[in-house]
Image 1 (cartoon, rainbow, N blue to C red):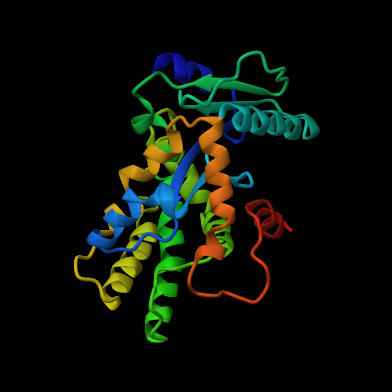
Image 2: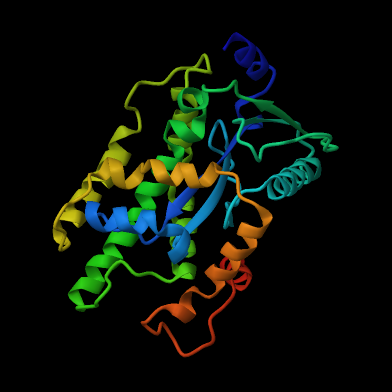
Length: 287
């Protein structure tokens, strides 16, 4: 810890970043029985996405989230080089805090404006800001969109009320990320204990608690036999596992191809237009 703190003292809060990935079962029902079957079959039913989030310690800069099927070493290095270029353009020197996930291999990348610092093994759950509440804040907001949609679909007597098009899920995710306040992000960084400037324990707890209360109310409105707790809904262990598992190139190609066929295989017709590929959906999302 002293080594990390010494490193942090060389940078201002606005120049300290943390990046991490998380999986998201974007159709996961808040029903324990249904969710278990959905998670077990997630690699087959293509209802999982991986999100890459990064932000700085004072919350003044949330980077555009990267949405992918799976994080690989190649994707990570491309993302890191892009970040380095952005900081060159802004004439900034920054520190990037990372966990030691298998894909986080910097090697001999010619970085000029981003210095990478890897957390010691087995410490990230305690001291990584993204794990200290930022990713949870994103998932609370995403699930709020999802459950409200499920309530609407239930009122319309739809057969599968948790069904959602992948593009819609990505739009909800982008809106959820954008909704997280700089105050929430800054306090998650401080909550790690890495910074001398401590914050009161529940300084932003009321905002997040209000959203959790909304989620509880939404769950109570849905036809669920075995309701899932809000904590489990926003913190399923399986989502983190799929974000950091290693995957072969062959499996990645199969996974991406199957995701592009998702709407074709669905029984319900979303619209009359031909289904878009994942790449086309990302272009729409960022346009």
